[in-house]
Length: 495
Image 1 (spheres, one colour):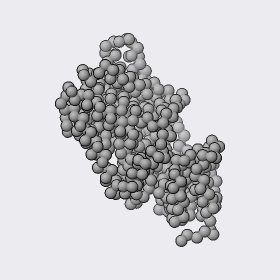
Image 2 (cartoon, helix red, strand yellow):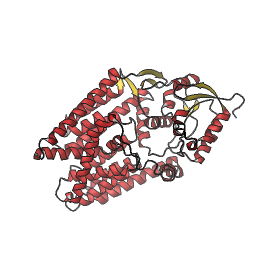
Image 3 (cartoon, helix red, strand yellow):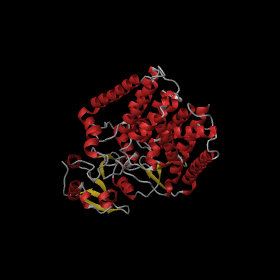
Image 4 (cartoon, one colour):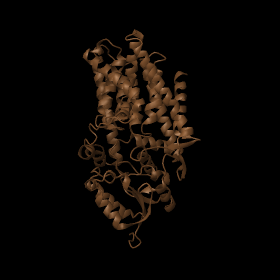
């Protein structure tokens, strides 16, 4: 009954944040959540990730989206229910982890922080959410009790998480394996080698399965070589503190995560694995591993708050101890009350704003109705000029537009970005695919290019692609958002 109540409460709040009058509020990022909806839609039509289209991330988020679209139908409502269900599942997992460490009232705090702040603010449909869910399940498997079977289950879950976000999964595996190793001296059930074997076997088995389905060379290049050779460390140590809008995150989930990380650091110094609660040791070290595993991602409050979800529980555990021991009384209690006020305020204001205050534009597409956060005249034009299933191109990134209009991408690249993101070979391949597939309609969105937005023409590494499009297509429409509508020149025939 306890977990059912948490499930219903979380589902209701997340639903109210993401739906209005039963219609999904489409706020998926064009380079994030919406991209993987497009990929899932391609898979529904028989295509295979890595074999038929490029992606440098693991397939888990695309498979999750595919599952919802396949079971519920390729509609915008299905996308919305995916967002709500994933968020609810993470909330229940967080509550279950908290129940192993916190007293009844305190265990509500991490779940409330997640629903009211983390999930409400950060990118819906993002690949990090399935990663957080799988890591949480992996941690949960060895929290209350430890045995070889539980260690194996933990390794399997975190192995799957590695195929959602590679660096997050590796970091979580290192942290969990280390905690089990340190605890093995006092608990026979804490078996780091079983964990490591299950983790390695899961990662290897999925690689073999993907290789057999999509080709080993394609999988190896997309998921490993591209990351190291092309993507590189472009986001490493990218730091941003955000504006005043990030203050609730600073004061709650980010702040609790910092407290949790400090607790873990001090615990290592005093060798807390010898005497402390094993659940706290595992979660502190596993959470720290997950946090530092994502060091290649930007360092800013919202991003850190996402990958530090387990550490927020450790932070709450520390505050619970301080309040119960009446250390520095009443300041820790005031801090907890302040966090509660922030969470309650945000958890109430967000749904209220969504339902009654924030302006939205009701749009109807082939995939269904949505409340749009911005006008999309270019998407409406695309839908009017095409038929369902028609091959088109949308550059550099218009994630979700293929799905909404039920058109098909004429290339194997869900997006193509400047600043050297895509290789010269990938650009040549995209041009070749446009030449062979011969799409009649396309969109080019100048404002989505960093080189154009900041006036740095030397960053415009997609120039060969644009030169081909300029030679082959006429500009037939210009839109207020900076996009242009393109139609293939009449004089150019398709073979």
